[in-house]
Length: 212
View 1 (cartoon, helix red, strand yellow):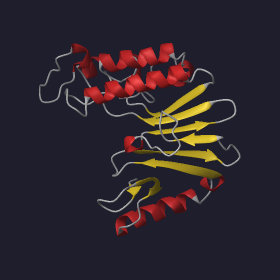
View 2 (cartoon, helix red, strand yellow):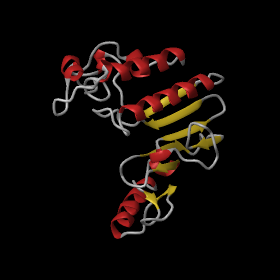
View 3 (tube, rainbow, N blue to C red):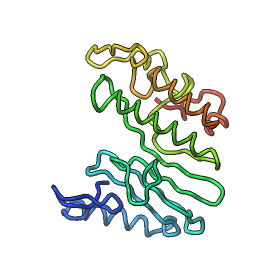
View 4 (spheres, rainbow, N blue to C red):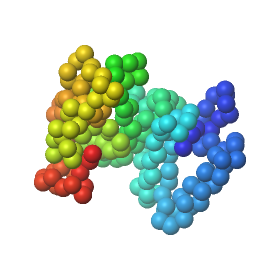
């Protein structure tokens, strides 16, 4: 969902856009759904992009209210991460980080490999700085860590777009399954002492549940 604000005007990433007939209709549909069971017992927080390109939402039962909510990795009160990619909720005994990781892309361009490398670096720094409290990290992480996590690892490892081959061999393959992304994610997991909760419960490959 896009953030509130007319074209050319500052956006409000905490509110849904409703200044056009289509956006008003979409907002009304969504708000009706959120006011009906079971969502009537939940509260929602938004962090939205200027368009429908990205954005995140966090829906929490009203009986489990977080102490603080941030929309960035720096924990600055009024700041929203570009494209609304982060919602961080602090509870009494743990933190919940909801993220929509930027896509790695296929080519070495400004909004591709460098952007994802910068994102992974910031996530690692945040995880290391947050070791004082248990962390639950969820959302769209845009990475499949191990071969067991994809349906056809050989195919994805060798995938190309229009025959393009990146200069760094570790950047080759399907975005989300390149060796570089998987290694950086592995570093975040290891140094942050994180556990893949799904894989911990499901140790065997399951094509009905696996990622592609």
